[in-house]
Image 1: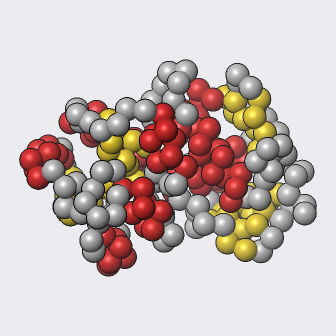
Image 2: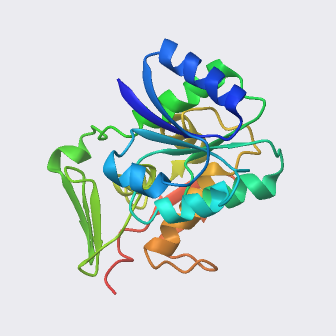
Image 3: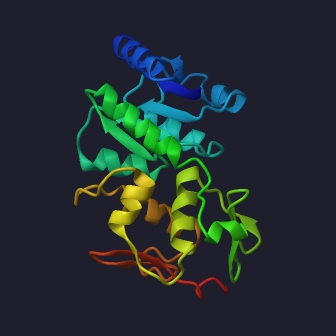
Length: 233
C-alpha cells in the first residue's frame, strides 16, 4: 500500500479524504498542522505528501520549503485559493502539483496516482546505459542522481524525471504537450504553468542563466531542449 501523509486542519475534510483514499488502496497518516511534520517525514518518509496551504502555525508554503531540504518524494498542495500567484509560488518552492478545494475525490486519486507513477524509474533505451554524461554533468538513472562539477544536485523525484526526459534526447526539441502527458500526467490546457516552473527550478539548480538560458533552452510555443555541449564549464 502506498503511504500518504496528509496535513489538513479541517477535521471533516481530512476524515472524508482519508476514507476515500483508504477505500482506493492507500494507507494514510494524518496531521492537523505542521507541528512534528519534519520529524514524521524523517522518521517514516511517505510515498507522497499532501499539504494544505492555510494551516494554523506555519503555513503550507513554509512547511514545503523546510521539508524540501531533504524529502525528494512527490508533494501535492491543496489550496482554497484559485489564483495563479498561489499555484505558481507553490510550484516554485518545491510542490509537484496542486489541487483546488473543494476537492473532488476521484480527481485527487487521479493526481496522486499520476505523481506516484512518475516516482518509478524511467525505462527507455537511453536509461539502459544508466548514465548520461555531458561535460561536467553526470546523470545516473540507477541511483536517480545528478552530479554537476563533481557536486550532488539535489533534485526531487519529478525534477529528475524532467531532466532525464530532456537529456535522453540532447539538442532535440521535446514538445510541451509531451512533458505534460508523460511527466505531469494530464493534457496541456494552454494555461497550466507546471512544466515552466519545473524547468525554471531545474535551471537554478543546474546553474543555468535564468534570463538567457543556454543549457536548457525554450522554443516558444513549442517546447524545450537540452543543449549537449553547454556543460563543460
